[in-house]
Length: 81
Length: 81
Length: 148
Length: 148
Picture (cartoon, each protein chain N blue to C red):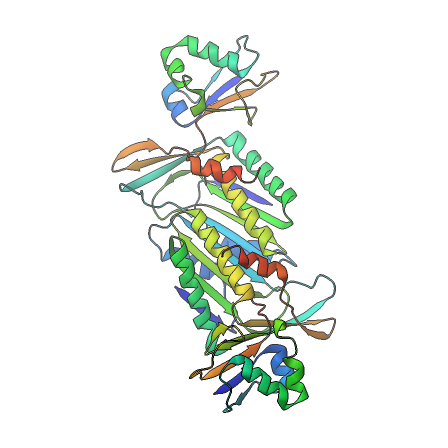
């Protein structure tokens, strides 16, 4: 599975993408695991209301399952248009 | 004062404009006077809900005064755009 | 503000670009283009638009000004044709420019609702060879009423 | 349906004409153009738009389809740029074509509200030399919520 990051999430984590092959079964479990890794992850994920998540390019809630997901993306609320 | 007519009002009266110098003080009085003239006028003005009137190029109600008006226009509801 | 009432065809894309280019510090431009379309029930051969020359420009200008009073607009443009038109011909366009999109959208809809029911234009259609004056729709009156 | 996500500039007038010309029996075309404007408080030097390539086209297409399900539309077009832009540059445009004006207006507003808050784009601005990520506005969330 690939983790991808955009905008200030990408800047604060310091990379646009990285592989993941841990045990997380849901987005929430993945977030908890990332937060435990390093302070930069902990900081980025400290306020989930300021983040959005997409599993395989579909916006989902943070309690969504990761079953067979190829790509999980974390980013701030969008500001297009 | 000039009377001007548009769309089917013009077609049914048979002219686009004609002079008027009678005693009418309001649009309503003018309409009553025109209806008494000839059947074609009587027919056109028989249902005022299907007509609109402008005095000096401003839409007004049928009880509006004619004081110093230069031009009175009668026409059906508009269908622009 | 640019208000044109004319018989000549005009290029919507060219007018849109010219309108957009002349504004500094505008974030949103909305355009509406009205096109002669075929009748719902028969085949439309042609349409003729009559107007009230002494009133038309003045009346549209008044309503464009009231749109400017009501919303935060950088500019407004209205071009409306009259005379003979056939299906596919552009009848008219409205453009609005504003800092924010809501102002531009609202003002464009307001101007369209006004032009449909209050600007002195009348459409005559020839459907399957028969002429008839287009009747005003209650739907258009209702659309206008929501701005009161 | 035409959905383009690109860095290259495009000609709004040309796109508007091409979109309008390809439709038979359409009475109404609405376009929205978004332009980089100066900041309310400082001087905007430049803007950079980042997006999520694997998701952007797919997500916009889904929402354009939901607009088509919801309103009676002949067609929809969205062009959205990413990369570096300066004040006055066109960021994006939306166009909708319909038989009736209300469908065209509503669908264009709906698509704009969606693109503002749900399409995967992020704007970074340089104001008076300082970079900052544009924050999402509650106003835009509220605008989107009215379509629920």
